[in-house]
Amino acid sequence: MDEKDWNMLITLYEERNITKAAERLYISQPALTYRLHQLEKEFGTGIVTRGKKGVEFTVQGTYLVNYAKEMLLQLRKAKEYIVNMDQSVKGTLRLGVSGMFARYELPRLLKNFLAKYPDVEINLKTGWSSEVNQLLQKEDVHLGIVRGNYNWHGEAYLIREEMISVASHKQIELEELPSLPQINYQTDPSLRMLIDNWWKERFRTPPTIAMEVDRLDTCKQLVLHGLGYAFFPNICLSDDEPLHTIPLISKDQQPLVRQTWIIYRESSMELTLVKAFIDFLKEETAAQST
Image 1 (tube, rainbow, N blue to C red):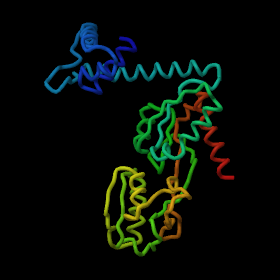
Image 2 (image 1 turned 135 degrees about the horizontal axis):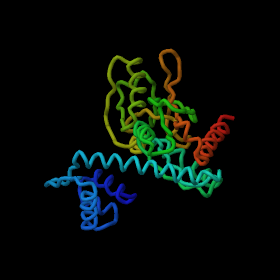
Image 3 (image 1 turned 180 degrees about the horizontal axis):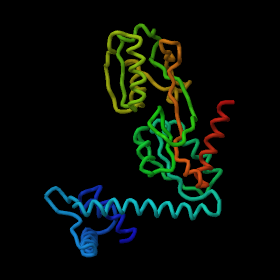
Image 4 (image 1 turned 90 degrees about the vertical axis):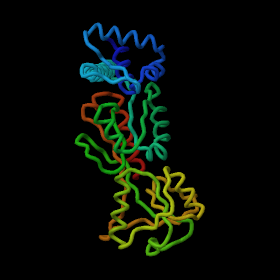
């Protein structure tokens, strides 16, 4: 087995369909089938079984997939450490970033970082913070940028903290909220829980949910057109938008804040490009706080 075989097995395991796996790998279906047969001959066992709905992996095949994942991980690490040996800041930086932070802050940061280190390439994956956490757990990324607090036992550094506010097209009072139409959007569970706990602390009746949408930007447009109010972290609010906002305060007079963290393994700091990026973010954080 070699690197191409490892990629083939992992792709087929993800797709469970020979035609779709071949398309992803940019090879023909007969070529993929032939190589699969060769591997089965090499190991003297069946790797997959074929059915009407696609392919299923045997116990032996699943073992080989896990072996392939481990080998690709070790190969990638070896390449990264070899590139790192001359201590120059170059190579591919693999980032997992919260979609919210990626939308409002990351483009500016990456532009400035790459201007400083032009020999670095960026491999970026975005999603919910919980998904970014999983990417880091599986070592699919060098570091993650997450919002909220997650069960991460490695290194973490706070890079941003902002208020959470209720926003509306016209001025309202907090006491009016239960009787006004609220617009919800899909968001990370930790943010939803923070807002829900604030509501339960303050009101005895549930909110009047008028609309539920999949994207924050859609929600904001509906609020801007006077169709209801919504709760937003201040990262997505701009001074030039005609919105009335009220920062949320807890019962014990503490502001509700949304935190953004860099999370990473201590061992990742051995890679020059990872250390350079973390140091860059710390410098940016310090500059914004002054």
